[in-house]
Structure formats: structure tokens, C-alpha cells
Amino acid sequence: MTSTFTRRTVLQSAAIGAAAIGAPWVAKAQAATLKITTWGGKWGDIMKSEVLPAFEKEMKCKVEADQAFPYIPKLAASPPKDPLYDVLHSNSNEQWSALEQGLVMDKITAKEVPNIKDVYPYAVSEKIVGVTIFTSAVGLGFRTDRNLTPIKSWKDFADPKLSGQRGGYQIPVNSLGQAHLMLLGQLYGKGMTDLDPAYKALEQLKPMKLVDFTGQMEKLLLQGEVAVGIIHDSGVYRYDGQNQPIDFVAPSEGVLSLEQVLNVTPGSKVKELAFAYIDYMLRPDVQKKLAEAVWYSPANKNVKLDPKYDAKLYNTPEKVAQLIQVDWKWFNAHKDEVDARVARIMRG
Amino acid sequence: MRALVLGRVAYRAINALVLFFLLAPLAVVVVFALNPTPFIQFPPIGVTSRWFAKFFASPDFMNSLALSLQVAAATVVLAMLVGASAALAIARGGLPGARLITALFLAPLMLPAILTGLALFQVVLSLGFGRPVWALVAGHTVVAVPYVIRTTLAVLADFDRRIEEAAASLGATPLRVFFEVTLPLIRPGVIAGGIFAFIVSFDQFPISLFLVAPNRETLPIVMFNYMKFDLDGTIAAASMVSILLALAVVLTIDRVVGLRATMKI
Image 1 (cartoon, each protein chain N blue to C red):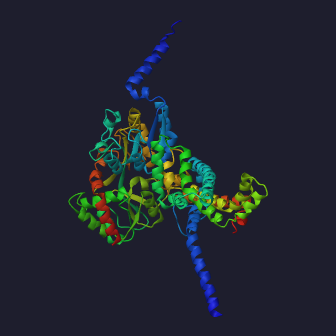
Image 2: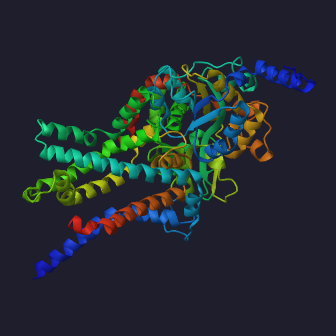
Image 3: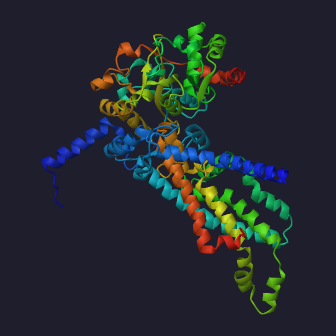
């Protein structure tokens, strides 16, 4: 038996060993399957066609991406020691709900996900469970062909001239509606948890067309059924270049933050791979690709966007300072009473 | 005479109103599917096939359509086998507690389907099966079987057993009696149930919501998820294709097995 150590084989072995030491999940993730949730639409298209295949190739793993809602009930129904998902992608309010049920981890740090060191503080603030990878700014979408008095403030949304032309959300089922209600508490009361003034302000917004989800609000604006509606910036900017008479305004008091959050399930059997996936999603190149595809503001500070996106998305410390984050833990704890009160207001 | 004419006019007007109520949503779907704007606009500004092109070019929609058809076909076969057998056993078997058994078989119709879906989901996960396609077929079959049982029991209620006795007295074996006498006579009920089973499975949403696996989603689930992010005419095109497919299946069954004759319609 002869030894065939050559300079090339030694170097190859050394490189593989070094990579395994530097990124332990590479060594352990052979042929592993990572089960994640993800969005549909254009986001889902890019994920399935480019982002996930590149991750699978790099990590030599398989990713099973579930795009079929509802994620949390399905996760809750699966065995905690063998959860249906390893990584849960959802908005922030759902992450808090998942945490209360013990379905996701409390905090993820730069120790597990090195790219966390490069994210804006809002992405890992005390208002966040898991890690924010992107955010959208929730402000007001409006028709540009209605000769409306220019909207500058959230309070302009209550202008009596807009009666019947406003668009909002079914608060019990939509987090934008819930966040807006809390914002009304801040605008008209002592803070976001001061809801009595918020209920009064909500009453003043009637009559208002209500929808369940943001896609419907986009259509109401496009159809001209509402002149002004609460919506995230990406829901308006996605029609950029399509000659649609709609635009987005960021009110002077700030915009609500609609975070896209990733988190790991405590019972995941491929936790290191799950952390690697989150780290990958925070990489500047991946962030840029997705941000520019769907007009989401990247959480990583080092992302350099093309000028068109750079001008509008929230990607500088000054812009990020305008983001208003909601205390979803507080809201979830009070959701039943809020729903009951809102139902009375909307019925009346 | 005048009262008779007025009565006829009122009768026709009410019929027209009911038809309008039933068909107006379909008209909205058609307008949305053919209108070039990416939202519902009335009156439409033109006619386009772009939403159909987008639907047929989408691998997600095409894969889900194929899966929905496969699952519906398997569901029809299973539901007809299980449903017809159960109906025969209930009607003929002299089983103790036949009414209770009937109620049990019909239970999936009485429970909210979303709960049935969640319960089935927990069962397959706790047994460690994951979310295979056969679990989806099983779930659809559970909610489709009651339709076959009801329609078959309805036929069996009018069944003249003397025909079977005549066949037997002429020397036919029980198996031959079943295939040559019983089955042809209960066929209208079984086929009617099968058509319901197809429609129930093809349009099934609450059960599929929990049992579909990633990248193996049925058409209603893909449509629902699509609507959350891209509410354009593609959804209307998908709806039209669904409606036309369901209609095509019913017409094909009519051509192949003579539905009109066997169901006396």
C-alpha cells in the first residue's frame, strides 16, 4: 500500500478542515433537510429560483420551504421535539405569539448568527423576538389623481374631506390595523398603550373601507375605491414603472415598522443549519437581491442598494430612526379586549 | 286570465333574479380574468389573455393543478369504494346500531372542516408520517365518503330486492348477482356521489390547508397564498379554469356512463 500524499491533496484536505472549523454547520449539515416557512408572491419566486438553491448548494443540504399558511397553528400542532419547521419566518406580532407558546427561541445573538453584528439596532431590539431581516415602512398610500390636500401627518388621515375614501384593516386579523390603533394612542393619547384616545380617534375615521390583508388594500387603491389607505411602502413601490396613479407618503410622526423576522424553533434537530440560514439571509448580497426584488428595507447596515431603491428604502441611520416599533407582547396580552372594543366601534 | 299572466311574469322574474344571484359572481370572475387591468374594473377596458398565459406559464399553478386532479381522482375512487360498501352494509347488513354507524360516517359533514383538517394533521404527524400525498388523499376521502353514502343509500331505499332474488334463483352466484344486478342498479347513486366527491376534493381548502406538504400544494392552497401577495387577474383565470375543469369532468362522466340516463335528469 502506497501513500499518495501530494501537495495538492494536502492543501485540499487542509482547506476542507479549515472550512469545517470556521463553519461547523458545513461539516454537520451533510444531506440535512432544513424546514422553513417563507412568503409567496415575488418573494417566493426569488427564494425558490435563486436564494434557496444557492444556499442548498453552499451548505450541501436540502431546504423544504412551506408557503402555505397558517404557520403557527401547524407548528403548534407538531411535536415540540420534532417541530414542523426549523426556521419560522413571520411578522413580529406572530413571533411574539409563537414565543408565548414556546414555539420559537427568545433571542438570537451574533454568537449564533455572526451577521447580526451588522444589523441596525431595531432588528434585534427588545421589541423583536428572533432577528429582523427586512422591514417595510407602514405609512399612507394615496391616489395621485384626486387632487387631495397634500398628506403630511397621520392626523391628515382623519380629514373629514376623506370621509368614505379611507382604507384601513380588520383590526382583529391584521397587524397593520393593530399597529395603527396603537399609533393612534401615541398620536392622541399618552402613548401606544393608551388606547381610550385611540378608540375615539378610530371612531372619527369612520366610515372607512376595511380589508383583511395588504394585497386587498393595494387593489382598493389601484381601483380608486379608496383615496388614502394605510399600507406598507413595498405595497405601493412594487407598482413602480407601471404608470399607476398611486404613491406613498411617510407621515412626519414616523412610520410603523413591519418587520420580517426569522427565528429558530427550540426543538429543531438542525439548529446550526438553521442559524446558518439566518446568517445567509443577512448577507449583504442576499439582502440586496431580495430588497430590490420586493422593495423591502434591508436590516444589514452594509447593504449598498441601487440608487432607485436607495432613495426610498429605510437604509440609513437617519431613515431607520423614523421607524416606530410596536410592543407586540403588550398588544397580544390585551388582544381579546381590543378586539371586543373595536368590534363595538365598527358595528356602531 | 290576467292574473295568470301576471303570475307567470312574476314567476319568471323571480327565476331570473335567483339565476342572477347565482351567476353574478361567475360574471365578475370572467370580467376580472379577461380585463387587462391587474384589478377588478367595471366596465372592463378591453380583453386580454395575459392572465391565462401567466396561469399556464406558472410552474406553481401547473404543478398544483396536476396534483389537485390526481388527488381528486384518487379520492373519487376511494370514496366510491368505501362509500358504496358502507352504504350496502348499512342498508343490507342488518348491523346493530346501523343509525349510529350512519351518523358516524356523516360526522365529517357536521364538524367544521378546519377542525377535521387540524385533527388529521396531528394524527399523521404524531404517527411520524410527515405530510405525504396519501395523507392528503385520505383526508379528502374522509370528507367525500359521506356524499357517496348518502346518494347510494337514497338509491338503495328504492331498491327492489326481488330482482336479486330472481337472479339468484336462476343460478347466479352471489358475486355475479352483485356485479350484474346490484351494482348496475345502485350505479346512479354511486356515480352521483363520485361527482360530489370530485368537486369536494378539487375545491377542498380547510383539509388541504393542514395536509399539503411544501412544494406539493393543491390548487386552492396555491390560489389562497397567491392572493395574499399578488391579487391580479391570474386568480380569476385560475378560478375559470377550475370551474371549466369541474364542468368538463361532469360532462365527461355524462358522456362515458350516461349520467343523464342513470340519474334520471
